[in-house]
Length: 224
Image (tube, rainbow, N blue to C red; front, side):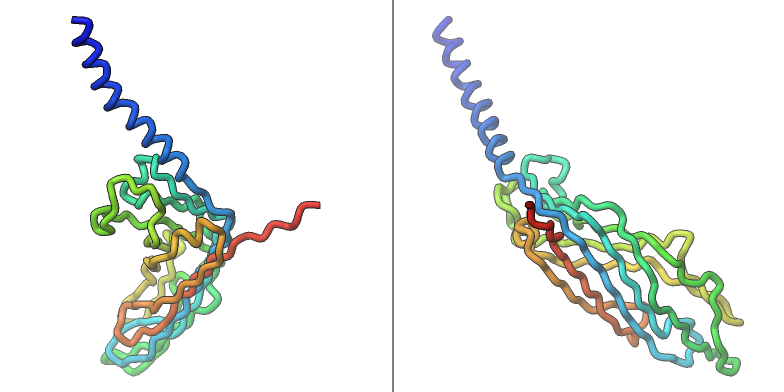
């Protein structure tokens, strides 16, 4: 009987202790980047088209996120849908530097549109990791190395401060602006600067524009 108990204890220990060692290894792989400033800039334009549409002729805005920290923690089960990567950031602060309306020309003669709710002086935005499926990246359930790239999502939070304009035929508004893009996660964890540029996709095929996103590590003054 005692021998049977000993064998069962050995079998139990072989199941428990490797899991504990794996947890220790996961904890040792956790990483935090130095603080960053993240700058998101967008500029787009759309030509006048005489089909009754109410569109923006020119738009430009920028958002700043301060003290952003990028994290990788394979021991955190809460991050399993984000490749165990996370963005620790408060809401960003944005400003609109340009917002000009196109004329409108449906069946009536061409005329100017007008703002019902003009651009806000300031607005907020979010920056987060896009949820991912680990299987799509061919990674193990709990990867012990940070992935080479991670998809981030930027989204404005205009809310009640959304831009609304109108003409004799009705009104239109600027929807929340969103951009999703890949970033090299190991570089961010090391505190290296990263730049991303991508095309803006607007409401109409004629819309053209660019997103520029800059990840700038905060340089601390040398200690005396």
